[in-house]
Amino acid sequence: MPEKTTKPREKSKEKSKQAFMEAVGEILKTKGHEALKVNDIAAMAGLSKKLIYNYFGGTEQLLDEYLHSQDFWTKLNHEELIGETTNGGREITKQVLADQFDFVANHMAFQKILLWQLSEERPSLRKMIEDQEATGELLFNGISDPYFGEKATDFRAIMAILISGIYYLNLFTKVNGSMFCGIDLNTPEGESKIREALNFLVDKTYEGLK
Amino acid sequence: MPEKTTKPREKSKEKSKQAFMEAVGEILKTKGHEALKVNDIAAMAGLSKKLIYNYFGGTEQLLDEYLHSQDFWTKLNHEELIGETTNGGREITKQVLADQFDFVANHMAFQKILLWQLSEERPSLRKMIEDQEATGELLFNGISDPYFGEKATDFRAIMAILISGIYYLNLFTKVNGSMFCGIDLNTPEGESKIREALNFLVDKTYEGLK
DNA sequence: TTAAAATATCACCATTGGGTGATGAGTAAA
DNA sequence: TTTACTCATCACCCAATGGTGATATTTTAA
Image 1 (cartoon, rainbow over the protein chains, first blue to last red):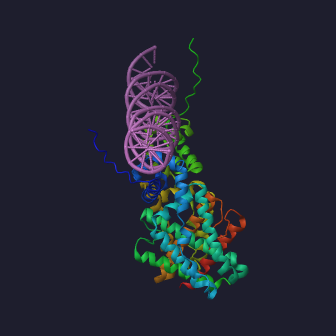
Image 2 (cartoon, rainbow over the protein chains, first blue to last red; image 1 turned 60 degrees about the vertical axis):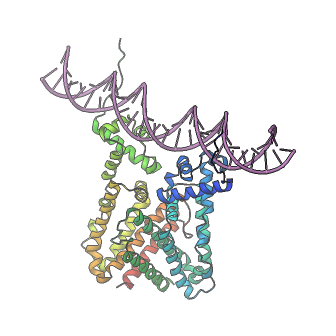
Image 3 (cartoon, helix red, strand yellow; image 1 turned 120 degrees about the horizontal axis):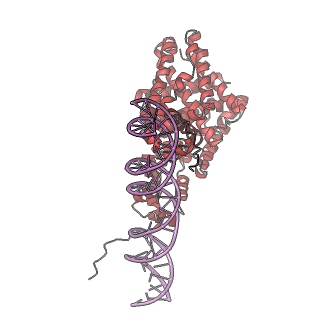
């Protein structure tokens, strides 16, 4: 008597592909991009690694597909912002920086991708960077450039520093759980101080640059 | 007739250890910390990997010893700065930021170590971070804290953002060779704009914070 | 000159990681 | 029930990597 093989076959190809994508996200969040090995991804997905080759062509393509599926810059909804530019966008600028801060502070996957961008050259990472630049260009072009005129580039340089600061500060303190310049970003007070400093610098920029 | 073994044996233990340390530095600079494997380090040093185990105990200890040998914060000579604090250290602050900018921009090994600090937890990396904090604390304590009084923490938060910005901006543009907020740090113009922005922000901070 | 210690190499093993061919097991149409 | 197709696993190969024991060579000192 042949024993009934109790292997329910509910998984379709799409479900499996999705499982791999989620496994990539999970490993990325918990261990970073360096830990994205075929064997581990397959184990995390609970499927055979052969399927990665069958469905995606290889790990590289799977990672590319994962990265393309992550569309951070449209998630950061800046749509409602444009249209009501008062004061040359001073409040909008503060809001954008605060949004960036919240986003990077709360999205582990985003932090790991920022780190990935600093560690490796890869077309799909490059594409994310280009999308980011394009989103920023939209804001600069539409809001700050007209306001600051010939000082527009100086404003961009300042924003470059502030956004970079937000990124690095979050990466650094989340990994090391330690102070930076005596500020502990892992405490509400430290976080608050950074937010205030950002607002202060934006204010002074709008007051002093033009 | 036994052929004369033309293997000059001029290498002593210390020379070999030094060769391994230099190999670590070389690989770190060219390929980053992820590429620091025993076999590769030994090949770069032109010696047997067994010696790494004999002399250091293993790759981990070798890396630790390398990191301990790198003393960046004393290389950044801030000694002559302290003592002549005018304007609450406004010019000194500008100078320190400019020095940091130069240093990270020109020292590939330092860039890679910054990245390493963001990627991995390791006691010897932690020690570097603590040294950095201690050096910074010295400057804050001696110069800005007395001047800004109860606003001292706000000043520190601003400095945290600016230094973080310097770090990330350099890491990002050197790896990706691309723009950030429309600024191309790989051109003299872009670099100049960032330097000016830093000075502007320091000036506005000293003017507006107190 | 010879014995011991230091220096260095080599061959080898175990583990991990990337990648593939053979095959099984369900499903659906002929 | 055959046939063919899709989804999935397994066993296996090969390269890279970490790590070690046996051994050879040079230096040093008795």
